[in-house]
Length: 155
Image (cartoon, rainbow, N blue to C red; front, side, top):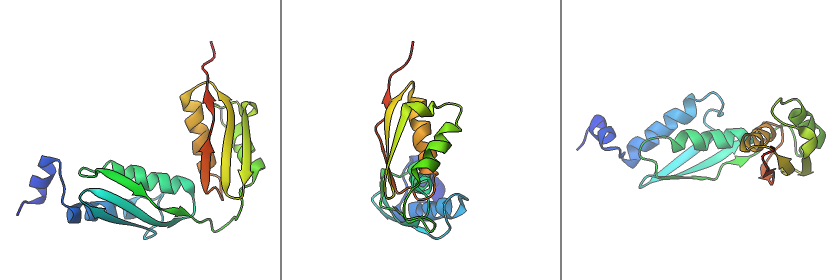
């Protein structure tokens, strides 16, 4: 049987070892609610399940797990279940976008349907597109984001 150090040197990890690492990462990350996200591992393929109150927590869990050695892919089945809101407030999103120095909020149209948010419009950079999505993911009640912002660099 190989030791943990031998497993790490090869760049591969057994499913059991990988599951232990995932559990440690998920439970030690302050932005992911403790014991709310569970993982299963099969041949390096990870499936995340559970419920979190914020969309960014779903993305954070996937990102942290995806960087672990031995993870081949991550299927993110975490659901967003806000304890505070059943719907997202469009005005709150628009105000949050307006407070960000990197984004021209007047160029972004926000549409809300329950907990689903759609972003439409034109931004000058990929950074602005991603920043808008990050802002929306941190808005209470956001369950999903359809980011249809078009990037058109301005001369």
